[in-house]
Length: 288
Length: 288
Image 1: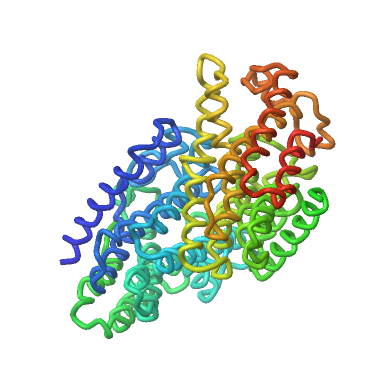
Image 2 (image 1 turned 90 degrees about the vertical axis):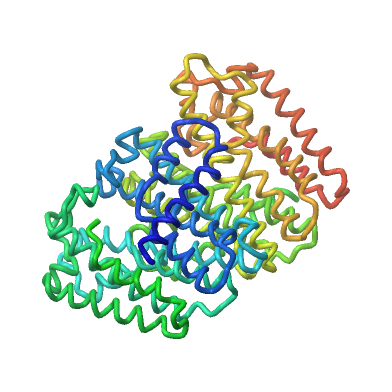
């Protein structure tokens, strides 16, 4: 069930991007925006669409924030890959934006994708004003200096720290860096439905951490070709990861516990949450 | 009247920034955010506050989008100054963010300021959901690939074009690059009041173009020390400007006509619009 829905949602999101990005002026910056929005697992967009489906929200409403969170994720990757940040040449198996164009285009395309994310998340077709304002405000908080950028800022600060990070510190860092957007995605369905976000928030917090631990495991023993990006950067840079702190087997055990926690958080939704439960198992079993 | 209100509003906006940015984690990125938000004329924030005052909106509501548009303007300056963009060392008379810290911090601080802009413009204290959603959605459109970033993308494309831009092309470029945020600022008061935006939009479109022509004149004959930034870059790069296309005296005449147009657009508001009329005269008489 999960694999089919993930694939179907990825196609829907790409079709929506085509519709939204198609009418823009044809310029290097807008071409780079389209390029950056192609490919990827679309896990965040799927979490928006699936949490909305589970709560009976019309997919024609949910597709807007689903595409919005993927635009935001795409912007963060374009900027992360810049030479002054992680300096990566390869992303999703293709040259990164600053390699294919140049750094100025990459900065601008990322900036425009961030604005687009808010435009999509607050689109009139998402719902009434209160719902749209709630979606946008929560997205701004999740992505800014108390969410994703905080995680990145802590990561940069850690590079110059004298001691490697502790498990507690790296958990906080990752809760911002990858956790905040995953949490927003899963809660978006509840926001669209006007329902409680707390159970989905608990689900996504566990899922996000499991996702990051799985990323560290993949980084340690994965295949760069399958992953479509450079691996083992953190280990080479002497950075603490969940694997360096817990060991490979300890990290696997912790990820499996978190998947259990994520599943338990979905209890209030009963059988309707089966696909989200499968998503949680997927994030620790993926090979890319 | 205008000068006092501009100065008072600049102080209010700085105080609001202190309140909003103060509680953030103390890290290089958040320090750079605070630094980037200091100083400047705060013309955009003033336009939000003054259009709101004119329409009887409580300043406690208007301060949020006023600070939001200044956060957005600050982000655009931090990214514009990067070596891969305009490569400027000096801004508002001080070292630019990537000079004082580094390029990675500048990219991240700009990214976080953009998210902050949407967080402030959609803050619950701005009004009901419909007003907040309207403010945020219009800001996303004004700042993204159909607004400010479009202007910047056209500017980059012009650098590699074989012919210098025509007056029509440079007008479209500037309407995006500086005009879109100025228009959003002036219309924000109407959005907060639930009033028609059309007259303020006409006012701001003329004002924005006059502002840019005045900028080109200042760039040609201004004092770099007063301006707090490097001048005559466009002329050195052989780029078309309003001065290169209209001549100095032609540019001055056109700017004065636009100030007349801006004033005429304010007729529906009568005497209540006097301060905005003065603002229009100010933008073509300023020396920085």
